Length: 505
View 1 (cartoon, rainbow, N blue to C red):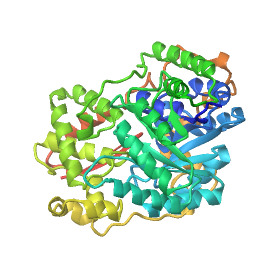
View 2: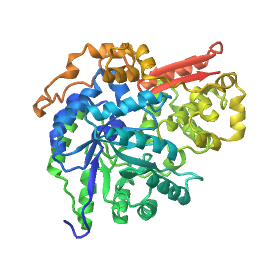
View 3: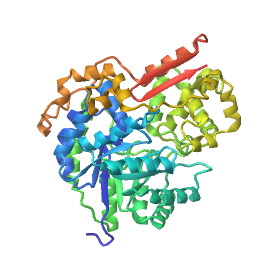
View 4: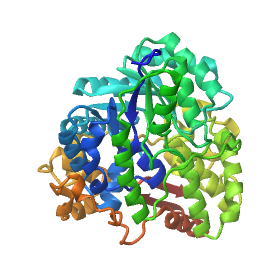
């Protein structure tokens, strides 16, 4: 052991790295054959899925997420499997408590051992509900306190949230910086607050959007944090998490020890890099520092998607205007944390404002719901009162004013999604992916292949769904733009794998 103690690691490659750099498109055939090696690297846990993966895998990749979890659980003998969960089982829509609880139960039953829990506004009552549910089921709990920069997110705010999280009683607390907004100095100061106000183990999670992620990871270690979230190249850096190779090397140089087997990390990385080259996917690379990122705070993956979407619409010249409008919309919303789903809510509304040429002329249902308080009292109370009055004067807002999300029983949900004979696992797949998409999935025996060895890797294979009709966000945004020009349309609803969008004039 190094003279300064041991640092442990949680791997994020197949979840956050995959989501941040390759839009979550890494197939089972390029994940499962690496699990045995990953299990032997020396990580405490590794992230495998989030709810958004279920939608994408079912709707676009024609793959079974339960199969991924079950096979990974069989192959991982020492390292815990982790999933990421939010306030409910879906980030973009209201879900009945019955299906959200069942989702947690089935994660555990299929092999997930612990979950990292987020609430987009760091609201303690939602933390309490999810931690309580997980403990009943037997899942380990890691509770996120999400970092952001705004006039309201002060040291006093984070001190209060650390104390609230401690009282909730998770197994661990994670200091999470999804936007890559931390500096080394801010990291050191806030990590000291965490260690002062709780005896629970602390994890540190950051991204590399500004190029400062690796420095912040070392700052956290120096401050006393002993569990760091990292990814393996080629799915580290860029808008992803710091590279485990870099953080381990720097920690060891400072006198800390680790149990990470870097030779296995290199082996896995070489295989993934071969797949990336065959499929024209970009490897994560260190980014240069950009001060503007602290102004708009748009996550890196969201910026790349937005740039692509606007290019497809021949509107790339509007990118700076959209980013500028995002700053204003976030202020109007009361400075929400720019994390799923609120970053998308703000980004969509800002884009609609720019496309329509008038602020809040076109409204998404999510904007109205947010202003009404349906996404939480904290969120509604922070909303700019003048902007809320403008939104509430719309005809659609008046219709939604007395609406509350329905709390359906599992029996009611089963009747809609396949009937009483549908298994719990199938019900989750149908609910998240849709009945039609599930039927297509169910006819694909490749999803249940038993060959998960390293020799089965098809590095030249195309990503699932890449040969089919494109369902990319660029096409969706083009459609939104076209439909928004049609004055005779009162309401527009569009659903994709990771977005449920509802618009009204």
